[in-house]
Structure formats: C-alpha cells, structure tokens
Length: 151
Image (tube, rainbow, N blue to C red; front, side):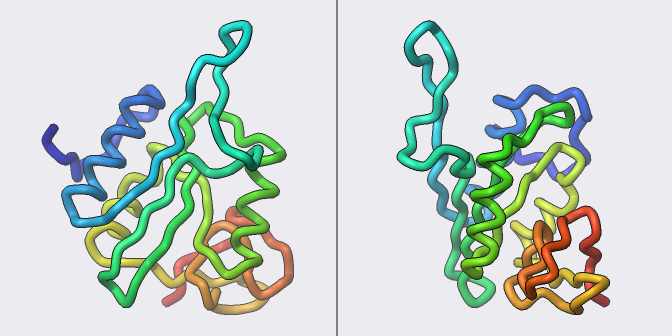
C-alpha cells in the first residue's frame, strides 16, 4: 500500500485510518505493536488486553534519540472512554508520550514519523519534558486541548 502524506478525509473509517497509520510508520522504519479487536461473546467487539482502556497502538524507534509512543486511534466521531482517558493520563504521568490521534491529526502524525517528537508546552507550566501533547506532565492536570506547540 502506498503511503499517504496528504490530509485524510474526516469521514475515513477506523480500519482504514489504522492501516494508513501503520503503513506510514512502518515505511519510515518505526516498529509497532497493534492491539486488535476481536468478536467476543454475544458478537460484541472486545480488545484482548489485561488492562481495560489500553491504547490501540504502541510505536517505537531508536531514531531521534529513541522514541516510544502510546496512541489510541479514533475516527473524528469516535468517543474516548473514561478508561482510555485514565490509562493515557497514567502513562503520561509515568513519563510516557500517550494521546489520541484522529484523522485531523494526520499532518502532526507525518511530522512525528519523519522528524521525531514535537515539543509541546502547557500555557500554565511551560514546555512538557516528555513531549506529550495530551496532558501536562508537569502536574497542573490540563488536558491536550490547552497544549500548544512550543516555539
């Protein structure tokens, strides 16, 4: 499959978004572990992990000084569960780079895959030491909607 560098449509389905994400990072020499969903009892979709809310995707590369990312992939209308929010906040507090990626984040995803992490800054605390765009890792508890790219 050819790698896309142009913006993704907002109405892309989750499976296609996941595959394009894997293609992008794989092509640029990142390794990954993807937690796949399966049909469980009663035909409900379930994810086979020991921790409810664990992110879909783990990406890593030795490039850029070594990078480890935990990402939950959601469509534009996809809802992040309370468990997912809690796990990502816990990972961030543990010094990891964890957040939700949506199709509207594609430009940022391409930049991350090609150039490494972007330094993010909390308007309250300053630059984030773990480059997390999701939660302020310095302790004020602000969410990613208040994080901005550091200049």
